[in-house]
Length: 40
Image (spheres, rainbow, N blue to C red):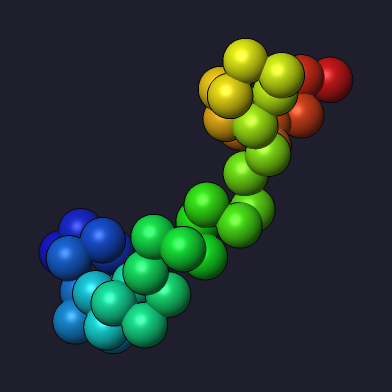
């Protein structure tokens, strides 16, 4: 079974919600959200 479809995963995502994801992103001067990906 795909991990993203497990009941525990779905419940955890419901608790987190979109606000927690947005809080970990930072917008640049143009308002674009930069993903926290290490290019090195």
